[in-house]
Image (cartoon, rainbow, N blue to C red; front, side, top):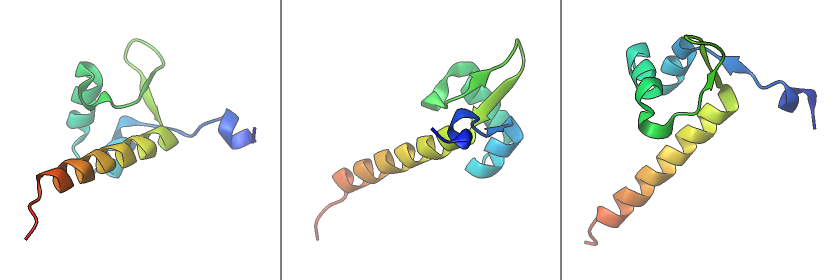
Length: 77
């Protein structure tokens, strides 16, 4: 296991909002409600961080699900 694997890069809510291109309040809502199953780490009562690699994987999963639902609803011409 590499040193990078044992020490994942933790990022803030603001950084996740930039990566996802959504408002910070949206990310906070997803964390509070567990909406979209966004992966996060709670470090205290109010402190939340995100593993950057987990967020990128999560986005790929959402993209793949979107591709599947789009292709299943498209009609052949």
